[in-house]
Length: 444
Image 1 (cartoon, rainbow, N blue to C red):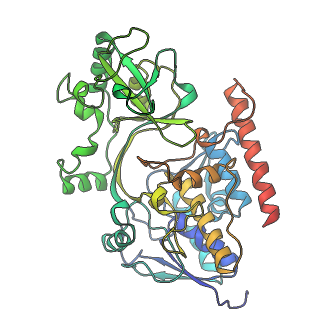
Image 2 (cartoon, one colour):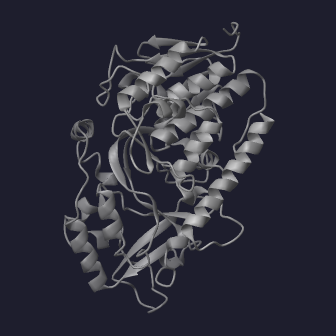
């Protein structure tokens, strides 16, 4: 058993991110109090009393190293992930994906946490952010009382719902059909514009209003009924806007005013605009296209937009209740608050989207806090790693319209060479990232 340490920290939330952060801290010799309100109190989505409960799916995504999820999971293994350790003990057959028995997975994580001598697991709801060193990992359904306390720290940068637009890779946009411009040529040509003639617009409109929507979870339906549709008006799904009338989009996000198609030198009938999602300009989001369509329907319908026929969607549009902070305005690449040292965030509340992404952020937040408590210098993960790119994305102060993001190959820096074979390109990207992580781990 390890000896007692003067270093102490609180971790709020016993989901994947909180458990990972607690374990990283404990392994570094920090005395951790891990607060989880279950089984005393449950969120609307949680039913099982164990830690790290998987609510919506038993899949932890693809295993293949040459995929974004496979690459991230391998990085997590090399960083000593409790999620990956539990997943190996509870996996079920799922083809090329890593799927687990959800209850066995939760039980294993709970067992590992309880067996760690430097972690004290406390079943208690925390209603205010602690004063000392802490990691806040309360997930997308943070309790109302704690959310109010977090709002006191974050001000206007705390959001309570998520209606996000799809994001595509820049190099998958057909620039033979699209063009760069800003309305009336004001300022820099910051937008990619996909022009439509009347026939293209009508075909797109008809498919959009008849496309299938994704069903909302019960707690999402309750949330949106409570806040009321008028509150949600500012981020109305594009398909809901379209159903108000055939020309509604043309007077909204698809308005063509102030733009001329350089191919015809005329104003288009309608225009879909895309705005850069990151400073590198490797990803673009569809402006005004927040949506609740099924993912397959998004791919089918949005490929009718000229220039996006073969667009690679790296983040589909979603609409669900999701408490998250505007991390680019608040956090460092180590997930620490810029204006409140020793306060770290991890998990979906930071704007990383998905189970493994949340767990991975918890690993790095815990590692970063442990280093700070022991007087060591801060570590910035290489951008070539998937976790490093996620950390850079959620802490990039140049991001204006922040949307939560899951792991994807589009956020990685480009290779020095152009590789047309996508499978080979992704394998090279993954190997480059893992090599850079191994070099960093040697220095730690």
